[in-house]
Length: 293
Image (tube, rainbow, N blue to C red; front, top):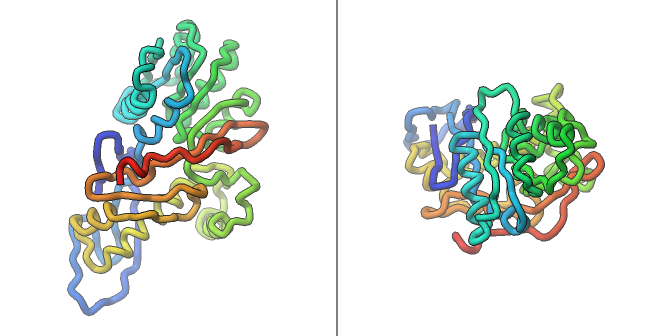
C-alpha cells in the first residue's frame, strides 16, 4: 500500500483497490508488492490540517470543538489552531468521541454549556449528522463550521434535517453534484455517465462519490506517468511531481500541486454556506500553494 505522508497528511481508513489493464510493452516492467499487470493497491490520501487553517480566518470569538479522538481529529484540530495563531486562546471547550460511541449527544450538550458561540464540527458523517441535529434540538445556534469530510448533503445534511443545517459553513475544493451551476460542465457530465454505467443505484446527491471519482482520476494520472515502472520509488516520484494539475471535479482555480518536499496535493479551498437545499459558494479561493511550492 502506497502511503504519502507528512505532518498533517493522513491516510483514510479505507483502502482503494484500482485495477488497470496494462498494454504490452517492449521494455522490461518493474513491479513492487501490490502491483501487477492487472491490479494496483493503494491507500486513499487526503490532507486535513493545511485545508483546515482556512477556517482560522473566520472565528474570532469563543470556539468549541467536537473532535474524533484519533489522528484524523487531532490533525484537523491542530490545523485550526495554526490558522488561529495568537487567537488560539479563544478555544474554550474541546469534546472528543470514539468511533465506537453510539452518539455524541452528551458532547454537544457539553459544548453548548461552555458558552461558546462558534462550533467547529470535526466529525465523520454519522456523528456530524447527530451533532447538527442535537444542536438544533437543544436550541444551540452558534456559528457552525463543518469539516468537509462531512459536507455530503445525501449522507449528512438530509439525515440531520435540512432545516437544522441552515447557515452551516464548510471549506470545499470539489464541485457539488447538487449545485445546478455545474450541471453542464464537461467533467460533471462525464461523472454522471460514469455513475450511470458503474453505479446506477447510487445516490448522485452524495458528494462522497465525487470525492472518490476525483481521487481515482488523480491516481490514474500518476500511474500513467509511471509507465511500466510501477515500483514504489517511481510511484512516489510521480506522485510528488504534480504541477498545476487540473483534475476533474475540482472547483475553478483549485489545482493539484506536489513536490519532493511537499506532499499536500490540494492546498486551496473555497468557503460555502448551506442555504435552502444546497451549498452556496462565497468569497475567493483561499490558497496556500505559493508558500509551499
